[in-house]
Picture 1 (cartoon, rainbow, N blue to C red):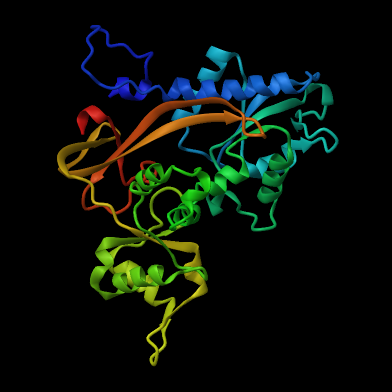
Picture 2 (cartoon, rainbow, N blue to C red):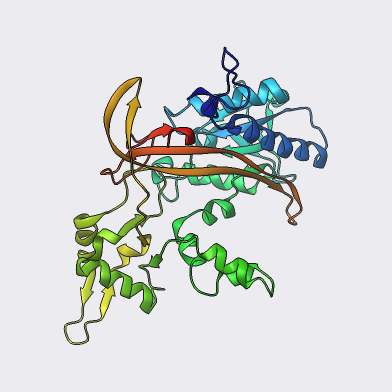
Length: 350
């Protein structure tokens, strides 16, 4: 569905509007980067180096199509060049001016007059352990530290990166936590927001009696109502059904006298989540232009949002920035597109 994928610039050759919602992601996301770039320009005096946006990508990246569209849009609409680089390569190619916090990309010949100044860093990698192959004290983490210590705007910065983890989501779901972020008299808003949460339960040292009750339910025939999730993105890492029970039992001991469950340390990296069951519909799924199959499917709609703010919380830009709809066969547990479990779709088809 080209209109939903390509966005508002796509117009059918016959001029007919079939009611397919416009997806502005490929223009709105670069626009937000442009706001951050301009803010950097206004804050810091221009140096002799050209200023660029750095895309942090995986070594041997294959999921490049949307990344390139963002890159092309930044150049064509905003005249901002992009440099792509992995965290591994960044160890030798990036340098940090400790006195100013300026982050530079070294020139190939070492000439300082040819180095480029990084104004914005956009992370399309760094979310998986595979992006840090040199280990916990390796060069990729040193690269990440160098970027975080710089004055360049990060998308996301380390704090926002951590805020998107499942552990933080689980903590936000605890009773009394959301109230910290709302003033008095906002109880209705808090309850409305909490009503959108699925059940999220800790399996670490901070597990509450309610968390243990959910775990007991999963081990006592209710495993179909839950999914065991690590702090990972993309498909292929979750545990469902019998595999969930097996994984938990391998890391739980029950005191025979008190029946108390003692959680193994390995479980701390997971959360137990209430499983969602979206409505099903019959669909034909395509992959690489070929019919993958026909059957009952479920879909997941995600909406992009962009926000740019100063260090003191002054919001410069905040807007809806498009959507991503994934559809998969209802019998498939995982849901990543790049990992091959789901396909891209459009709201008009679901």
